[in-house]
Length: 263
Image (cartoon, rainbow, N blue to C red; front, side, top):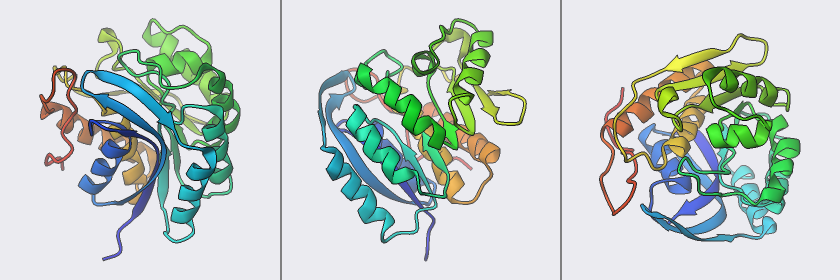
C-alpha cells in the first residue's frame, strides 16, 4: 500500500482534542498517512490551556526538513505557531514547495484564549498569508488579520476581500463563533464570486478541536487529489459527523469524534 501523505505543523494538545493530535486522528480517519512537525507543547485539557512552551525555530525547521527530505508529502497545513521566530521558520520551509498549503492562523480560540504573541500578527500577514492556497481563520482571527470588526455576514464578506488582498489564493472564514452564523462558512477564491457554505448547526457544547479538524480534513482531501471546493465540502461533512457524535469527556468542552463513519 502506498497512501497519500499529509504534513501538519502545529502545537501539541495534551488533552488530545485539538492541535497535532486532532490533525493526525483526522488524517488517519480519512486514510491519509500523517506526518507532523511540532511547534509548541501545551498543557491543556477540556477546561483550558494552562501553559505553552515553544520549541526553538531551528528544531521546527529540522522536523520539517526531515519529513520533506524523505516522504512525498502531497499537502500540508499549519496550526499553532505562537511567535515570529516559528512563523519565519515555517515560511522559509514552505516557500519553495509546490503543493497545497492550508494556513490555519491559530491566534485566538473560539472561546477567546489567545494562542499567538501580538508581535507575531504582522509576521503572519507578511510571510504566511501569501503562501496559502487556503486561509481558514475563525471570526476572531479574521478580525485580527483584516483589521476589520466583524458583526454581520456582510462584515464577513468584506473581511474575506481584505484578507484575499494579502496574498492567499482562497479564504474560508468559519462562522461558528457567532450564534447567527452557526452552520455557515464563507469561501472566497481568487477570480471567483464568494459563496456561503451552509451545513447543519449541531447543538452540542463539545466542539473543541473542530477548527483544527476542518483544516486537517481539507488537507487530507487535497492530498487525495480532490479540487479545493470539493475538498472543503467533504471536510465539512466529516466535521458535521464528528460534532453529531462529539465526546462528553472531562469537566469542560469536550472534542468532536474523529472515528465516526462519515461517507
